[in-house]
Length: 197
Image (cartoon, rainbow, N blue to C red):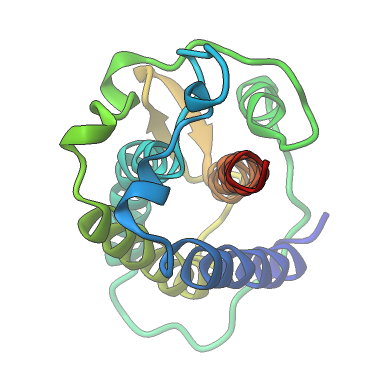
């Protein structure tokens, strides 16, 4: 897997994520964004669309700030990025596996990135923050190609003792977003089926 091709692919996937949020979720009413599958049957562990987006805001803000710090250290304007073969260590492989949209394993969500109660969330603020964060991620990704994705490391939500390579972190962020956007789309579909029945 090559860095520059991966960066281009990630850019494209972020665009799809943003388009989904703007086209599928932004037009919904506050009540629709807050609707939980619990309205149809008891399932207290399931999130609303709004909670899915807020979870992504909380989790990804941490990583995006760290990526921004790395990009800000670049200093002088770079002219051409160097390509490289991407390598993953066990931390990267494990974290990528846990957020893969195809993997059906549900892990407990740490308290610091668990969304507040749905009634306490402001839908407009949550969606706007999501769009801002992912727009910033696209901008940072365009600059991050000048960094060494195998050598640059950043701390994870688990602390400074567990670090992830920059390339794995970028891939993880996009996969994590896709995982919860897919979850939010399933909630929307279930909501539409529930209302129609």
